[in-house]
Image (tube, rainbow, N blue to C red; front, side, top):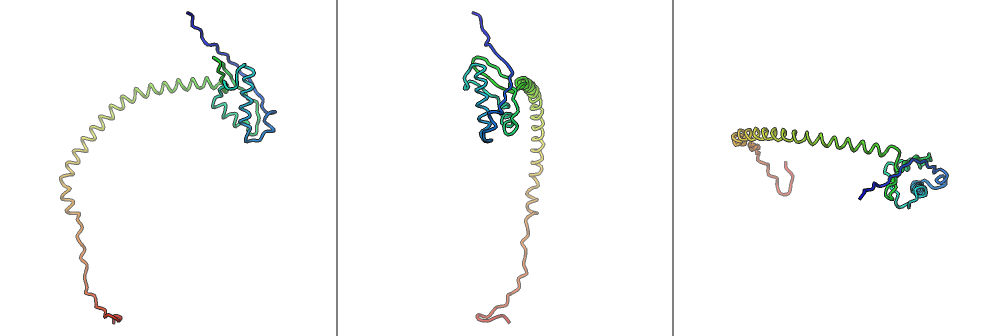
Length: 171
């Protein structure tokens, strides 16, 4: 049995949407532009508009581009197993490079974290031992400190108040 690899077709096209978007209100332009883009790709790649996937970066670019500028959009398209993916040119290469760098970082951090974690655990154990010893020493003198810190009650100079007669004022 021979294994067959899926046939991948890639191409780069430029689409001009100006004629279709000029007369459409700004709030609807992005939605219409995505529809026209999918129809154009479906017509040239002989697939349905539902099977077309648009990358997030291309979507954001089209939203910014179709507000007022109406520049022609260059797109790289790849078709494999009935699924058509549209993205900005060079986006797929950049994604692969980013993934490789992320994997390298994970490998480096995994190696360093195991060493660092062991060192940190040792330091924490030493610090805890020192703090426990300090608390014992501090605990012995706490009763003496509390006695010293108890505030003495203020003795107010109590002067006898002059008695005020029942119905009058004080003379």
